[in-house]
Length: 434
Ligand code: DLL
Image (tube, rainbow, N blue to C red; front, side):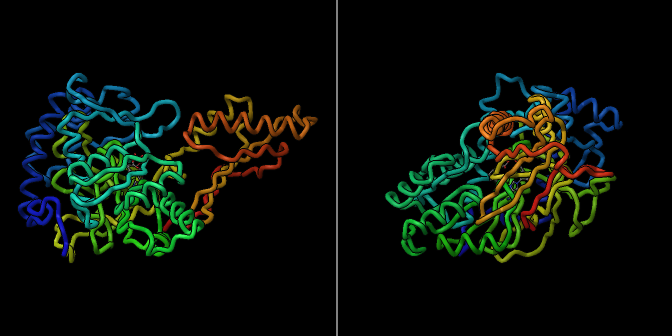
């Protein structure tokens, strides 16, 4: 039988839900207009006043926000409460230089934890569950988000953070973890490690997994489910909107229910900004409905996606989003970390190399490989193998500092990277993610 964390809300009649959203939206717009000078200016420029927003149908009158706005307003220009009212920050792995910093009041954390609690309960989780959280803790929202959700459910939480697979397996087996939360690629890796240690799926205590933060395919889902002997659920979110739990999967596993009492989703044409009808593919845009510190209004996620409403056998009435099908910018997600080619270019130039480079990303045995090919300088031609290796290591360390993950760096002969007559092909992504 399907379980809900908040049955009344999760199965609310669509007409009631719309009323609730409209009421919340009116209040949210007023709050932002009164307390956020940046967004007030955008609204004024568009000639929109809070009283023009009387319900969901007026949403399209509001201006969009983009990552560029967040960069321009860095670090506190997007805050809608005094910083002293905030209790926490989180941050994205950033574009060149500045990262996005999201602020939370205690109310915002409670709301976010509730979203994650809904996701956990939808997988069958309850107060008897043992939830192993191996998303990273810290600035990344994955660890603290699922941790907060498990706390709300009353489950026993194992706050493992990512890495140290041997210890993950030991705690999982010794304590009998029932729900695993991590990126799908790490889940696959844990699965392989368990297999190598001779565990059969039936020996593994896990019942379910909550995997997200990066694109993954249905094939990967089946693979993970088979190896770990579990049901694998998708979860979606982004730092700007709160973190994981903006949308979550139910037992039907055909898309993620958006927590519509807290967030309104729209799909727009990324070129023109025109709102597209349900069922059409475009860029996903979110509006927060009841956040205090960092309420994003019509925030452009850059994720390309499709929305569909319809009866779900789980009983939930919330709109569903399909797995994101790509991005409308050049951000890649490699081993769960957001990476922009521009970050790599910045490091190369700073380290004295040219912008002749190529990034090759692939997925081998469910793990992302990440190689950066860079031309060494003509004056380095006489270098020994040893000194080339030392230079590769130095560059790799500099890239790790910038990106948070380590690519394999290959210094190659000058002019050996193909030149292009049009746009340079800097990134070759061989992963089949959709
Ligand atoms: O990745 C939040 C999160 C943590 C979600 C744990 C799920 C689980 P960011 O680091 O800000 O936040 O990255 C957000 O990651 O715009 C998508 O492009 C991508 N993404 C997140 N979840 C999924 C998913 C977290 N289930 C960006 N499938 C988003 C595909 C996802 N892409």
